[in-house]
Length: 120
Image (cartoon, rainbow, N blue to C red; front, side, top):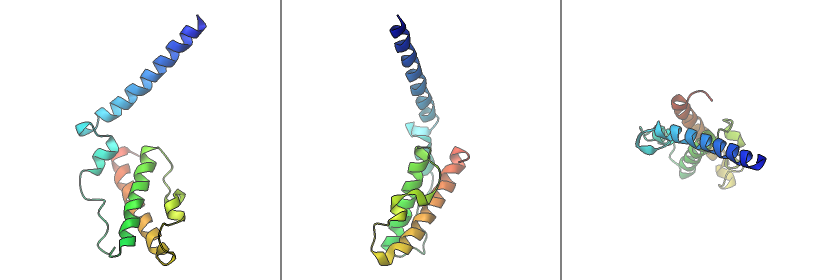
């Protein structure tokens, strides 16, 4: 008898979590999550014009992706926590340019995403 009630309780909790996820996705247009809907509005994720080198554009893009990951997984916002920032996947001479671009992409994405999703 007790096992039956435990199963019913687990099922109820599971349905509660699923309904919360459905509510979050229903609030965004076209069935997208709130994060992906916010990202599609404009070209905020375009690298700055002063990023002429591929390594800078790559770092900027990967910084944006790292910020999206942190927001979607409710992680603390910190570019330094990412392996790609600490150990850039570029030649040694390009590491500073990559890190600078990564941080700028990360910060721009956090500003954009947090403006739509509330405080960090």
